[in-house]
Image (cartoon, rainbow, N blue to C red; front, side, top):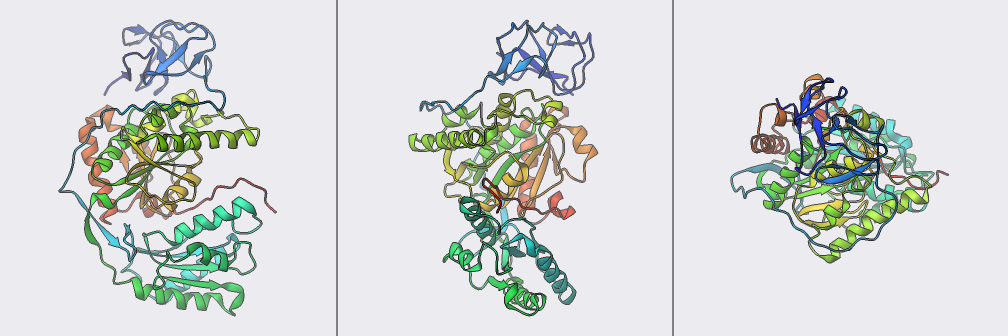
Length: 494
């Protein structure tokens, strides 16, 4: 196992890959104090005000003189970031590593509208949060009466929204829930309404427009029937009969749409798991597939790298708007734009938002940015796309899946169990986490510093994702029954 890493030759810090004690030597430097795993040590004297360089870029500045061999972290470093800034279109396209693969395929469900699902599930989508238990009761009664082992499961997704909302919040709730109802991982959908909520069924159907399959969608307003469970079971049976004979078909990798997310990050995230997802994203782009990168606040400080990779100036302008709109969202709520990372991130070795962002955006690899998706929007372009989401894990994953991603890949250095309404695969940044929380973690990217090369890791990972997409394996969140959604909220609650 490697003991430490200097990520870029111009860096003035090294990252310790294990806990180091005072007096040990790192890159020819004798440590003046103990350095926790994934934390940074100064490789030279750094004067107060000088930049801390990691990943070949500034991650902040020294708030006091730092001696060579000292621990470099929140006690002596502060962000360089401040406010909304002006950007210049300066395209720069780095080398993209990868290859065209004509042999690998995935077995998926082809939907009538030409989209492809990696699961054939039956869902109840609730227009309002106060009927969550009604939805569960319908499902439980249905399961008592019918054997559904020939489909991939029957689920509903609790949420607290759909009423006491107004304006943009109500519109976004309706849009996200409609996106879920249209998702290709569902072979059938029952839309369940209370009847008196703000998110009225008529408006919901109008939101769906002509995009939904009438053979695979049913609608029920609880207040309009005597026994919603009995009627709901009947409607689920109709949907089940229409979907139970669906079969997987073999298709090229280009049908995949994969969301990219990180959470509970640590100092290893930008060294192992996030670069692995970046290589995987590039591999998919080369093979005509799609990846979607969110978490806009965790692009702050690294946004210029993404802007430089915009496919054209129009896309560059969309990225600028994406970044500045989210900064203004912070300012409009009188919050500090750069109040990040979280306490867990800091404990894991991430010092500033630049530090986090430069590691976070590595999930997007080196490919051109082909498009920008607004929150609640749907993917339109193949290749790497950006989408407007906050960093919040569940909101971001819900938004990624609602945009059309069949799977979300989620890197973590601290560990997190949840999953959204599609398979949500957890990739550990370090072997200790992968070993300790094997019931949460789908893949160990910590092997990159333990025993495998990036190319070996990538081949293993491609195989795993293809197996999950083809239904040969279930993600850990599916095995554990973790399926949740959360919808972005900006305004007041009535």
